[in-house]
Amino acid sequence: MKNGMLGASLLLTAALAAPFACAAQGGSLKSDAKATAKELRALGEPMDRCSLAAITSDASVVTGTYGGSVLRPGDRILSINGQDVAGQSSSVLSAALRRIAPDATVAVVVERAGTRTDLSLPCGNSRSRMEALLNSLDAAARGNYGACINALGDRKDLGAQGAILRARCATAASSVGPAGQAEWTYEALKLGIAEAQWDAGARSNLIDVMRRQQVQINKYLGEDRYAALVAGTERWPGAETLYKRTDVDQGQLRRIAQDAVRGRLLDPDSARIDMPYGFLRGSWRPMLQKEVDGYWTCGTVNAKNRMGGYVGSTAFVVVLGQEGQVKYVELGNGRDLDILGTQCAKAVAYLPPAPVEHEARASSGSPGSLADELKQLAELKASGALTEAEFEAAKQRVLSSGKTP
Image (cartoon, rainbow, N blue to C red; front, side, top):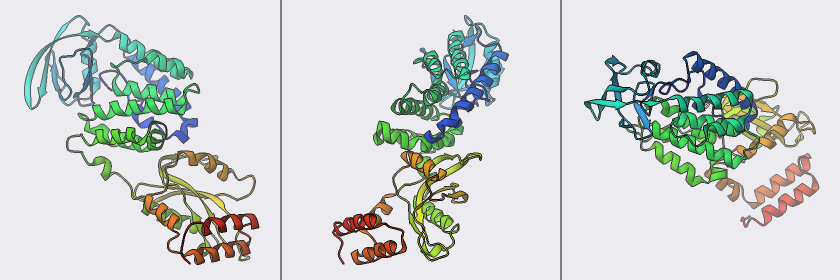
């Protein structure tokens, strides 16, 4: 809990999902918001009580301040009016503050830059910020996401968690377009990264959310904005390379995915697999099944049937774990009513492009020459995989590519 703001039932940072999963996000947001509002009211909020104008981690470390607070980011709060709160959960800190009137002056001991420092701090009143938070949660619980956003406004005293709640409501709101959703998400991540300067426990989760949102931010805000987020993670003390260390090998994922698709075919050696996209960190929701979390991508495959003829391109989706374990594979049926094909056709808008090395191989035709590609096209036409028109169009693309025989 951040200084008594948000309960454990509303894991806001973890809940920012990939854009393609937004259809399912609204229901989750409603239940999360309802549970958290109930929890806060059970604690007596909103109430007139002491606020130190600070955002704290779950170990009573100040991660952000507002309203001219004497505290500083990085301060480790050791005690309040003689009560030991050092290293304890923020619920302990919040309970201590709820017992103090908003007009009181409190004795606070902090560890600042390795030195014990005694402070005498005037309290502020937390009622306004808690009322804004509860109004926003109540609106989200009713599914009124516009009111959720308006209740939060541009408040800075709710920290990254308040910004993430606003981003979730924006993502669920039909009135907010994708560019606006990306902007709110970017601002929430920016605040979260700044607070994680002093909260090591939040870092891995933030990086996971960043990867889920990368395509949306790149598409609507520009790659330089996402690069700025990455640069923020590189300022985390002792974790400057954490983002790079948690990256995945897209090339390895492609190879594993291709093998997984071949394993579902009658004639795997005949498979012609096209994977024009990279993998996205997020969730794939199969029809009538629970969503599968991991790195997913869509592509198409054409392979021979029992009669030795190509059946035509069929959509596929593969979901892999971070270590490359296969979590889900599905192939479409290639017919007019191909549910998977329809899903993939919509989903690819959120996928990143294929890795640069794959694009280079595709554009150069490596390892085949012009003659090899023409021969391959002729074989596809003869097998029935390509119509006459498709064959002619593909042949013209090859002939105009500038390859040598």
